[in-house]
Image (tube, rainbow, N blue to C red):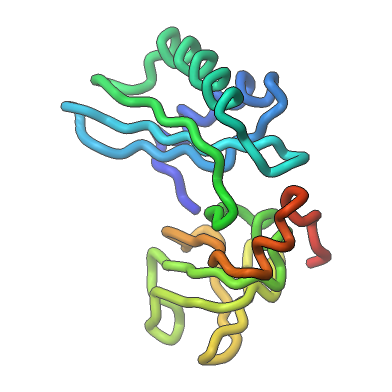
Length: 172
């Protein structure tokens, strides 16, 4: 998924602080206008796929401190720290590989070759940034960089598979 230049800058600033505490950034999203922004940061423990309330509090304080120093946002903002949850967003190649075989919804920024922007299907794989989904209309391929929004679909299979943390990376 594409980040704005400002989201990339914020990600660069906060990544060392987040990783120093043993967490990984899943997504950084800035929305709103200069009269009031919302900065949403999704993070997780890479071993468990979880982020508890105490972890959110700890990350919030350390991220606030570094953002106050670096000041990458012009204007006021609210900082929100959260876990990606079970029906997490799919952001990069590793996410599609980790959740191979699971059902997801995808929205593309630019329509596919068949003129469609929205898909629902099962993740077949991801090779060199090209994701393959098995949909009701057949097999569909798209570039990860063309994804505007993608997330897993909450179902019994996903709940069972994530009881003890996220699935390990599958083979491409």
